Length: 129
Image (cartoon, rainbow, N blue to C red; front, side, top):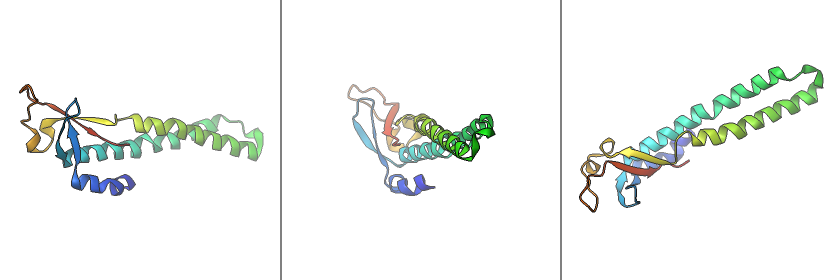
């Protein structure tokens, strides 16, 4: 929900879409929506699942004989390690540069041609992190 509300203006106004060479072709609300949805998906599934599961598995393997302070240290270490692994993984699930079929965007992007007159089938947008 946090990503949606913090990036809602982006979805309302749209984001620039460019060709593979960086030529800006316009502003697309659909590209913004796709980027925000991918970010929400990676944050809601890619980040919390390992952080909730890995420490539990690790703590099952830690002997209880190390005492309460040792257990607390082991648990904090397991949680920190899970975060250090999960956060970069969650960010990397989808590339930052979003490749989109031109026909998936608004109608004004469907029949674009480049400088040589060739049809532009792929456009790119910065998905953000």
